Length: 243
Image 1 (cartoon, rainbow, N blue to C red):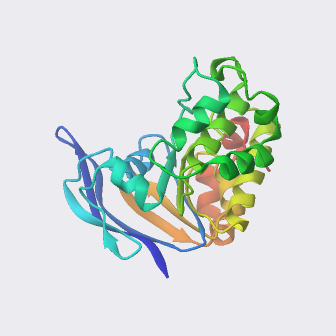
Image 2: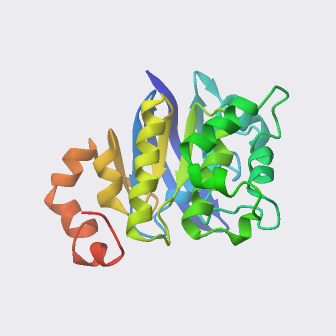
C-alpha cells in the first residue's frame, strides 16, 4: 500500500528546472532511499513534499489525500516530518527545549514521547540540560532526529543524516534508522552515503540532474556494476562511506 505517491513533480528555481517530472511511490512500512550526486534534486524533492517549495507541476498524494499546496504546518500535522540537512537545532536552547519545539503543534501530553526519545538516544538524556550548540555533531544529529519524532511521524524524511559525521557515529545513526523502521515508521532517506543507505533500503531510486534513473531494491542497486562505479568506488569510500 502506497503511503506517499509523487506524480510528475516539477520544481523550478528561476529559469532552472530542478526536478523534471519525477514520479515515485513509498510503500507503507518501507525504507526508501534517494541517492545521487550533489545538485541532482534530492533535497529539493524532500522540501517539496514538506511544503517548503512551490510546485510548478505535478501532485503529491499522502495516505490517499493530495497534499500538494498545503502549508508545512498542515503537512506536519498529517504525519510527515523532516530531519533537515545540517541538523538546524536551536543552539541557544537546551536539548529538552529543542525537543519540546518539535512537538509545538501538539496539544496532548508529550511526556511518553520525550521518554522514548531519551531511550533511543541515552546521550541526549545525559545532556538534557545542555545548550544544543555545545553538543557534538553526532549528538546534534540525534537531537534533530529526536525533535522530528516528537510529532509522532508516520513518514519520516531524512536529508543527509550522515553528512559531516565520523564513521562510528554514522553507524550509530543508521542503526537508529533501522530501529525506527522496526517500530513501524516509514522512512524516505536522502543520502550521499550510498553504500550505507542501500544496505538498509527496501527500495531505492537514483536521481540524476532532476530525473529518475535506475531503481530497484537496495540489494539490487548495491550489486549493480554501474552503481558501484558511480557511487560505491574509492572516491565514495574516501568520503567516509561504510563498507
